[in-house]
Image 1 (cartoon, one colour):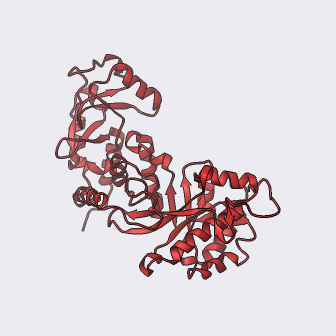
Image 2 (cartoon, helix red, strand yellow):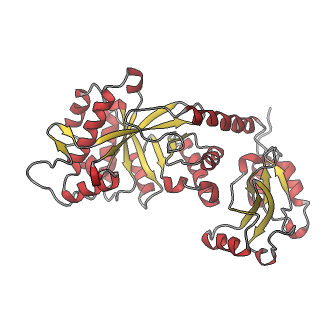
Image 3 (tube, one colour):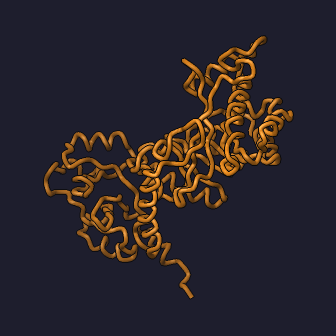
Length: 400
């Protein structure tokens, strides 16, 4: 496990503490249950002063200067002072604090001073969730397991932060068994454009459900990302789309809440339909505008080696389906390469298998383009997905 590079003797610098005043400020960003609109907690973020305002610059400077612990204590003090002044109903919500493995393994964290600091502000471990950052290198898994178990025994909640950002995520996940798993924003960013990421996130949704962990998508910034995340089964999220960090805990604005309710109504209408419909299989694939050239599509295939096809859109409506194997014969703007099958998301899987297999031999294994009832593009379903799902349904026990 890494440790501060230097430990400086003497007075603590003013950028950390000015007497009893911490040299950092706190901000709060809500974590929202997308199905209900309720805030399930707040992540606590810290900001420095001047050139150290950026969290990255602040914590890097502290590490190389040997003040990692002192900075963490300043951040905690600033945040706890803010939290202690909140109304009782807000103070109950769990607050998510980032904690690096270096700090967690520091003897001063477990010597009682952390609990005393909480008690001094009228708070306890049950008010906090410790976010173990997955970007840190974890060398001693047994130590991490012991430390996180001790924290859990004291009443702290545990979260794995930045999941998917580094090589040690699965190892850390096994050792700390977190209640919350926070998807790194690198997985969330532009997820509507990356089918591979969608498959990965869908598998993580299934995994978190099976181990009773709460999966949170971090860094959500656009409605395109939000829509795809909802369809993949993500229930909890945070990011600029929902609310920016503020000096005191705030709920998302009504403008977001209004669109969230609209998105949830559309999603629930699909979920209430028979679960044999194709909507649950849809993956949002790479798209280009109808004005795109062959070079543009070729660039998409080059930048996304896992992509097998690209959908050409006119506005939000599908006009062509270009695969790797037929790119050379595609004529932009022509009626060639129109999708061999476009269906609505409420079509039953069993019915779609018949429709897909009835296509001409040269098109029988083409992906199926899926739209909503208004004809707007949602994504595609591959024949492999379709046949696997049809097999699952066929093997279901008959309802009694």
